[in-house]
Figure 1 (cartoon, helix red, strand yellow):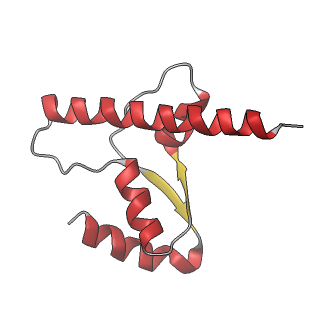
Figure 2 (spheres, rainbow, N blue to C red):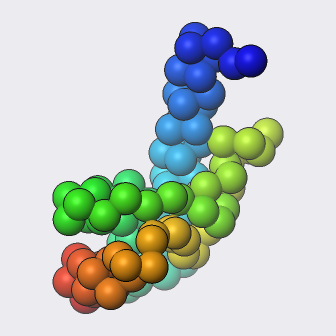
Figure 3 (cartoon, rainbow, N blue to C red):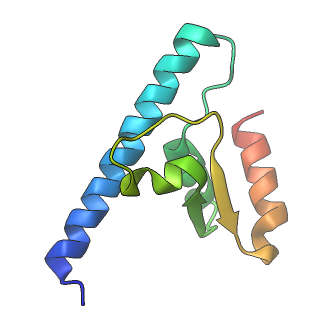
Length: 97
């Protein structure tokens, strides 16, 4: 059974990995693809949560907390409920035109 202190530490490590992966992605895009829209997992999650949509971060950004080293990714993968798909697409289209 995982204790509360262990859960807090795992959450901290996942957030740290998320921020490192985002930082590496931003650096890569700035150096290699300066005209690409700046989409970060933090901004995607914030936009969806602000719209009242619960989601799960998946893909590379979602597993970075389990890896020995965080890595960059060119996309942000999220899972939303079926009933929120259209709303999520609309929100993300508006946030990242």
